[in-house]
Image (cartoon, rainbow, N blue to C red; front, side, top):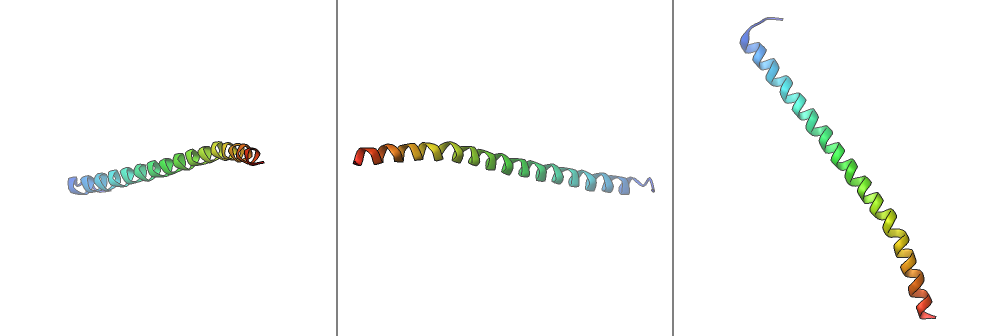
Length: 62
């Protein structure tokens, strides 16, 4: 590998750009995963509450 300063700075800049892009991609995947987990937990807690509310509203009608 030549030790030319231009080549070395280009390689380091390009490598740094790839590392930052990879970190951003991993961050986006993590954020999407957290949002999906949060949406699932919200649905799992809301579904039984809605079922209980429906059961109470049906018993009031009869």
